[in-house]
Image 1 (cartoon, rainbow, N blue to C red):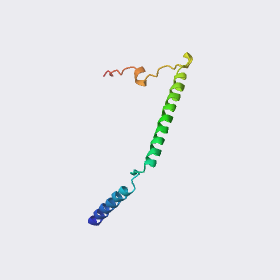
Image 2 (tube, rainbow, N blue to C red):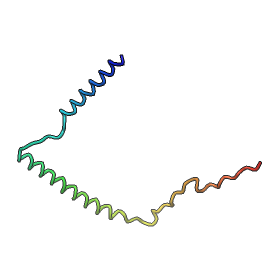
Image 3 (cartoon, rainbow, N blue to C red):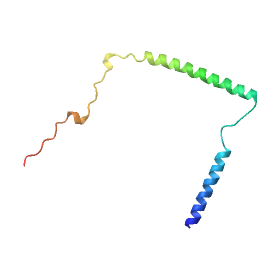
Image 4 (tube, helix red, strand yellow):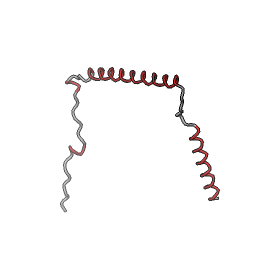
Length: 90
Protein backbone atom coordinates (compact mmCIF):
# COMPACT_ATOMS: atom_id res chain seq x y z
CA UNK A 1 0.00 0.00 0.00
CA UNK A 2 2.79 2.41 0.91
CA UNK A 3 4.74 1.73 -2.32
CA UNK A 4 1.61 2.15 -4.42
CA UNK A 5 0.85 5.52 -2.86
CA UNK A 6 4.42 6.70 -3.42
CA UNK A 7 4.32 5.59 -7.06
CA UNK A 8 1.04 7.41 -7.63
CA UNK A 9 2.37 10.56 -5.98
CA UNK A 10 5.53 10.59 -8.12
CA UNK A 11 3.48 9.93 -11.26
CA UNK A 12 1.15 12.80 -10.46
CA UNK A 13 4.10 15.14 -9.87
CA UNK A 14 5.66 14.18 -13.21
CA UNK A 15 2.41 14.69 -15.09
CA UNK A 16 1.90 18.05 -13.42
CA UNK A 17 5.37 19.29 -14.29
CA UNK A 18 4.99 18.16 -17.90
CA UNK A 19 1.67 19.98 -18.14
CA UNK A 20 3.18 23.17 -16.66
CA UNK A 21 5.93 23.16 -19.29
CA UNK A 22 3.42 22.96 -22.15
CA UNK A 23 1.13 25.76 -20.98
CA UNK A 24 3.68 28.58 -20.70
CA UNK A 25 2.26 32.08 -21.23
CA UNK A 26 5.45 33.43 -22.79
CA UNK A 27 5.98 32.87 -26.48
CA UNK A 28 8.73 33.92 -28.87
CA UNK A 29 7.97 35.47 -32.23
CA UNK A 30 10.17 36.72 -35.06
CA UNK A 31 7.36 38.66 -36.77
CA UNK A 32 8.40 42.35 -36.96
CA UNK A 33 4.80 43.56 -37.16
CA UNK A 34 3.89 41.72 -33.96
CA UNK A 35 6.98 43.10 -32.22
CA UNK A 36 6.06 46.65 -33.28
CA UNK A 37 2.51 46.18 -32.00
CA UNK A 38 3.80 44.97 -28.64
CA UNK A 39 6.21 47.91 -28.35
CA UNK A 40 3.43 50.38 -29.23
CA UNK A 41 1.17 48.84 -26.59
CA UNK A 42 3.97 49.09 -24.01
CA UNK A 43 4.46 52.78 -24.80
CA UNK A 44 0.72 53.42 -24.46
CA UNK A 45 0.66 51.69 -21.07
CA UNK A 46 3.66 53.69 -19.90
CA UNK A 47 2.05 56.97 -20.99
CA UNK A 48 -1.21 56.06 -19.27
CA UNK A 49 0.58 55.15 -16.03
CA UNK A 50 2.55 58.41 -15.97
CA UNK A 51 -0.66 60.37 -16.65
CA UNK A 52 -2.43 58.58 -13.79
CA UNK A 53 0.53 59.19 -11.48
CA UNK A 54 0.47 62.95 -12.10
CA UNK A 55 -3.31 63.07 -11.72
CA UNK A 56 -3.17 61.10 -8.48
CA UNK A 57 -0.36 63.26 -7.10
CA UNK A 58 -2.32 66.44 -7.78
CA UNK A 59 -5.46 65.05 -6.17
CA UNK A 60 -3.55 63.81 -3.14
CA UNK A 61 -1.86 67.16 -2.66
CA UNK A 62 -5.11 69.13 -2.57
CA UNK A 63 -6.74 66.73 -0.14
CA UNK A 64 -3.97 67.00 2.46
CA UNK A 65 -5.33 70.33 3.71
CA UNK A 66 -7.42 69.47 6.77
CA UNK A 67 -9.14 71.66 9.26
CA UNK A 68 -7.88 71.89 12.82
CA UNK A 69 -11.25 70.62 14.08
CA UNK A 70 -10.65 67.21 12.51
CA UNK A 71 -7.69 66.42 14.77
CA UNK A 72 -8.20 63.53 17.15
CA UNK A 73 -6.60 62.87 20.47
CA UNK A 74 -3.77 60.38 20.23
CA UNK A 75 -4.85 57.00 21.48
CA UNK A 76 -3.14 55.72 24.57
CA UNK A 77 -2.70 52.13 25.44
CA UNK A 78 -4.78 50.80 28.27
CA UNK A 79 -1.72 49.74 30.25
CA UNK A 80 -0.30 53.26 30.26
CA UNK A 81 -3.25 54.60 32.28
CA UNK A 82 -3.42 51.85 34.91
CA UNK A 83 -1.74 52.05 38.27
CA UNK A 84 1.28 49.86 38.89
CA UNK A 85 0.67 46.68 40.85
CA UNK A 86 1.50 46.71 44.54
CA UNK A 87 2.65 43.74 46.54
CA UNK A 88 0.19 42.44 49.10
CA UNK A 89 1.28 42.61 52.71
CA UNK A 90 1.19 39.34 54.54
